[in-house]
Amino acid sequence: MIPLLSVIVPFHNVEPYLTECLRSLAAQTLDDLEVVLVDDGSADGSRRIAEDFAAADPRFVLIGQRNQGPGPARNAGIRRARGTYLAFADADDVVPPVAYERLIGKLAETGSDLACGAVGRLVDGVLAESTLHEKVFRRPELCTHITDKQVLVRDRTVWNKVYRRDFWERAGLEFPAGIYEDVPVAMQAHVLATSVDVLGEVVYHWRRREEGETSITQRRNELSNLHERLAAIRAVRAFLDERAPELLGGFDALVLEKDILFLFQALEASEEPGPLLDLARAWLAELGAEALAAAPSLRRLELHLLARGLPAELRQVREFRRARAETGTRVVPRGWRQTGWYGDYPFFRDRRLRVPDEVFDARDELKLIARVDGGEWAGAEYRVHGEIAIHRVDRRVGRVDLWLSDGRRKVPVEARRSGRHRIVAAIDPARLAGGGPSWRLQARTETRGLVLKGWFRDGEAGGAWRFTVPGWSRTGMDISQ
Image (tube, rainbow, N blue to C red):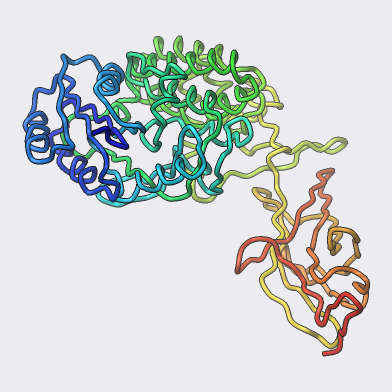
């Protein structure tokens, strides 16, 4: 009888973790599955564990091969698999009990080609959000596509998903050799799919190993590992350039946000940085100039020093970043006739290095903080108490203008400043007559040539702050208190 789902599990010397992984698969609420275990030349006790599971549970089957790496092992598992759907699990990770039932349930409902879900990072037995997948699954959506929901460019793993087998074969998907074999396949699947289901629930627990052999992820600062990562980046960029060029900018930005960190870490630890600097130049040459220019200012400084082959100065900037991790870095205005807003970082206008000012330019990174944290009635007026400031700028905001909007009309609001960042706004409901029942409060500020706009947010409940007109009705409103 053909199983509904085939789960492919390649393994190589993961004895400390394999039992927990396989138990999590055996405990799935979707029991119409087979688990194809692929022994990729293990030399520890992993195969014995797999044999025990295969002997005890007919849903588990075991095949073996000489050590070729995770990509060829997954391909071998796919050839053996019989299921209507395909899923992948790494042998040191854990799959929550309802994961596959939820993913396949959505695919059965929508007809999409693949379904993906959120990931938890398992470190020392504690589960936290995976920073690799952050932002991707906060807004679930069915029947979408990566070209419409471009945040999916950050979803570069194969094991938090279920795929239709016929889609996999129709798309001609196959894992390449190498240690980052899943990144190109994950991107290809997203682009080639007709539609994708994005679930908000955590469907996979990705472990950071604490014992046994170190994982590929934990060896990511090794020179050979970094060469492999660059090869995967090149493969993805070549595919996107041909099939979905609109995604290249987002992918490059992600590389500069996440992947480049491992190159920095390797350079910081290296006593002979020459080969790493050569590799770094190859990385930068691969990425688009627009992505390099659009990186945040502190990252641009790191990239500038990297491109110039200055590892000592790069190390100093990295230490500066870590020292400010909790307090954050500052942006300061400089200039009298024409004010610029620059990151307050090392080497600004350093006579020796002569880093261009535009590397430090942080104007586009500044955001208005407008927050309401209380309010009360004072006669016929409603007084709003809040805060208005500029993120990363340690100075009083200059001119402030406030108004209420119901989506059609704008009504100015008088405000009084208090201290560096406090503000009190007085709302007269009578001035809102003829408008809607719900109004949002917006601010416009001007500080040393910097103009910012923003909506006030609710400091307690989160989300937008709204003023609801008392006694509102379509025929009129009663504003009596």
